[in-house]
Length: 484
Ligand SMILES: Cc1cc2nc3c(=O)[nH]c(=O)nc-3n(C[C@H](O)[C@H](O)[C@H](O)COP(=O)(O)OP(=O)(O)OC[C@H]3O[C@@H](n4cnc5c(N)ncnc54)[C@H](O)[C@@H]3O)c2cc1C
Image 1: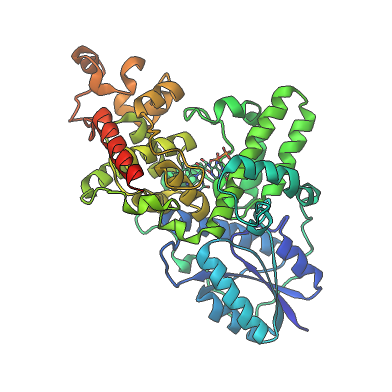
Image 2: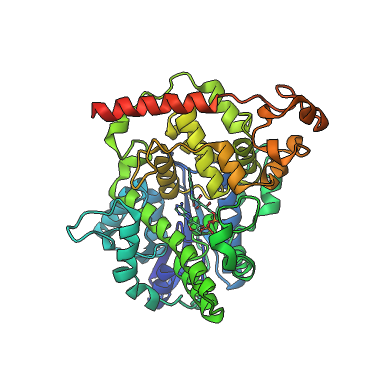
């Protein structure tokens, strides 16, 4: 009997998976496959993503085994491996959920064409977005570049199919007997050689059940206060679902529906506001994916072409290193960079602050920050990361204007007034009074002494003068603006 391949990619889940559902409905034997691609490109997975992928694949493998099936893991070129497998497994259908990264779009088009030339039918589905990029265009057929009208249009037009789209049930999966040797997950060597992952291991549970738990925790404990607390880095006020979403361990419509159900059970004006505020973030995620699809060059080049001639600093190696290691001497920035290093995540508010310091005060190209995030974030996502960096640098769609430069001291005082977040990640500052916690360099000598702090010894002096560098950035911006 002919077989079908379900090619898992960024949809590492069994529940609520349109491609899997459709594959099962062909009533043929299904071969679940994951291909770890060895062809490297600019945005091949970074260290933290690989760590997550290892555990997410193990979880998927385990779930399939519990159902008598087996995830066939292959290492190599997706195109070649799929062709080989189709031949070996006597396959006439390949199913997958769509990806939107430029290299994935090109790869999938190529593979689809070549499989079809070999009389193999390819069926692809939307497994990860509320609305796909070609569904969310303006009346004139061009993509939105500003979020609010995009979101309004999505709510007006885009979600009718979407709210109707209830999470699909877990299909019955026919046990598979593999006729070929399977690669062991360990042999993909996704885990680090030097064990830097101890804290990350304690913090996360990759895989479908980890995603469901994170969602349940968020609904039980945090969504009600999301509008007030989502910006406070010292509080667990957000869902921490981004890595689960990136790897497709949970679908956005499952999250959407669960949040709506929570809202229906908690019928105060506050709960409606909280649910809307949260779901809007899923809208930003869609927006980022639409932008990436329509403007694929933005992973490396600014969307706003004026920034092509921006005079970024040339010799920045030392300062980039200080920023990466959380040694800038600016507490909220250093706390964020250390949170990132230790847990693979950084709070959204702090991501904006550290990105602003890098691009505007230090004048280091945003692409350098994006690369560091790419390697260290467990939720590294080409669409969200590209949009986040271009937004902060001022060069993207609906970007924060370049002249709006975050002052990290004021941001710290506003969003971490008691310094809980800073004290947690920078224990060397833990005894400083609140008044100086975001600017230890302004503290009088006796306050430093009482806090056992010697600036330049156990905590750095700031590597940049915030006020001078702000003025310098504004001058550059005014010159650039007037030139174009
Ligand atoms: C410079 C910079 C780089 C970023 N890089 C990434 C990245 O690589 N991967 C990533 O997933 N997010 C990225 N973000 C967006 C955001 O910081 C994270 O999605 C968020 O912090 C994840 O935490 P959470 O799941 O608790 O979010 P919640 O507040 O609970 O939001 C729910 C979900 O909405 C989506 N979301 C929330 N905020 C945004 C946003 N601003 N843009 C797009 N989607 C959003 C995420 O999928 C998130 O899981 C970046 C932001 C900035 C400023």
